[in-house]
Amino acid sequence: MTTVGPTIVPHTSLPLSALGLPRFSALLSAIVLAAPCPSRTAAVEHVVLNQAGTPSQLSGQVLLEDQQGGLLLKTDEGAIWPIESQSITRRSSSDRPLVPLDKEQLAERLLDELGPGFQVHDSKHYVVCFNTTRTYAKWTSSLLERLQKAFIAYWKKQGSDVHEPEAPLAVLIFANKASYVQHAKTELGPAAGSAIGYYSVKTNRIVMFDLTGMQSLRRQYSRRGSLHDITAMLSQPEAVPLVATIVHEATHQIAFNCGLQTRFSFPPVWLSEGLAVYFETPDLSSNRSWRANVGINYPRWDRFRQNVNNGRDKSLQSMVADDSQIRDPRTAVDAYAQAWAWNYYLIRFRRKEYTAYLKTLADKPLLIVDDEKTRLADFRKHFGDDLESIEAAFYKRMSKIE
Image (cartoon, rainbow, N blue to C red; front, top):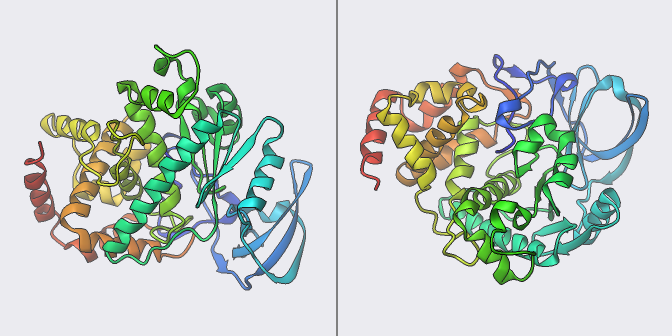
């Protein structure tokens, strides 16, 4: 499961005063906002807050400010905080620009936040804060490094203006599900218990727990241990969706930090989720449980094919126009399968148009939620006006997949 944007409202800017935290597709918050104004300076702003009687301070660059004085503030660790005007008690500015934390500084920040029992493992692009085994933390960072390298290389080859993340990316790994859920409840609410991990567009972190501690993966093993033990556990069939979830959430984090997508610009959920599902495809025959040469995601493909055969697939127009199907927990599994199928088709067979479409969406202003008319116009601009012909080509091509 993944984080997504707010529910669709008419083409308007999102009021900072009501900007809710993006949650899993089943738990989205409805939002109504006032028009934001562009940020006036790149200097660091210091904001003293009083929320529910608790004073606190945030410092960062103001990305947007609405007419009531609400802020969208980006901090030095890469978080983006929506701040309501009524919670601000004092503001001041400094002349210095915002400087992202380096790995050592980010590690120190995470350890201070999470407290005793946590350690840090860092790799080229990631800072992993964990209270499980260092072996598992290293395995995770190795998987994510391989994914990031392949992901960025892939989109560079397609002509996208992507780059390595400008700052280290944070990953939190809890030793067990109980401690993970306790932490995740702040962001996910009741959904925390139903997900094994998530990426937050607000904190810019991936949060998960050690999968090798799950009972379903420990039938023949009594402890966590070497890389061999981890690989053996995660090579069981039950591990397929679990590894896929790690890669899925990491894909979101990379896409929003390499220039392919823009946080708080709210791309269509079918596109954002379908892109992550495309790259999530696991390969448990690999010692890293994932390979760069992404193939067919057969669990999603099988679900999609069943829906087509049973007449449960949705039209291209309805999928592009709004996100209700993929946000509704009753239809989300089917919608994710359809999102995978369309992203697979467009990436493989309409690659140039797909890349340009991503660019159009990434360049949209922050906090703007497009209405159905605008979403359809953006799609038609890149893929053509005749949606029925596009659908016909799609089904013809997909019918040949084995």
